[in-house]
Length: 245
Image 1 (spheres, rainbow, N blue to C red):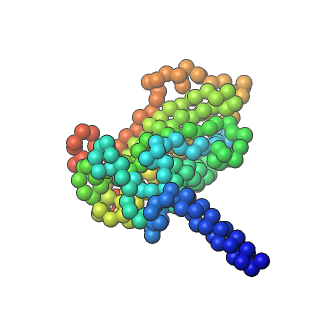
Image 2: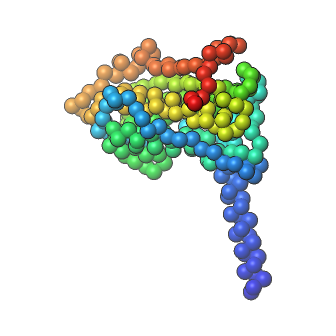
């Protein structure tokens, strides 16, 4: 019996270890874990809204849908820092920080991850297009974060807003902690603008027959938001700022 219990305990320990490795996508048993902070300060003119929002987990390509910290040595390659990882897969970490940031505004009735089944008036669907440190513009690297977002009205699932938010920040040193600071600053800037755009796009009151939409406004491609700052175009990266002191 004792031998059987010992075997069972070993099996449980093995399964537990496998779960941990899976959580960080087998990032080579990282010795250091990093995360990103939510936004807590917003513009004073941010409107208060009386509707509920669900935030989907961002869609991401396979090279970003991982707990490892992505780097690009060339425009067409992806690699990862050794022995370090995010505390969660990048899309899930970004989703959590978006939700946290909405809550920090204190301007919205309720916001949650889409997975809990909230009866939301709107669903925010982010697409994480860039979340990597780029080395092909020299060292220290430039961190690029880009999110394409769609705001969907429920329950008819009508897209009422499309926006692109992109920020680039050069790390202050070619060291992982400094690169993570650049990730934090770039993502924070993207999230701040994403939250503001989401709260300002629909009417402040929930959808109803008494508050009809000007649907032509949302269907006009000219009204799509493209918000990019400090990202290099072509080979010129001279104007990309460093992280804040």
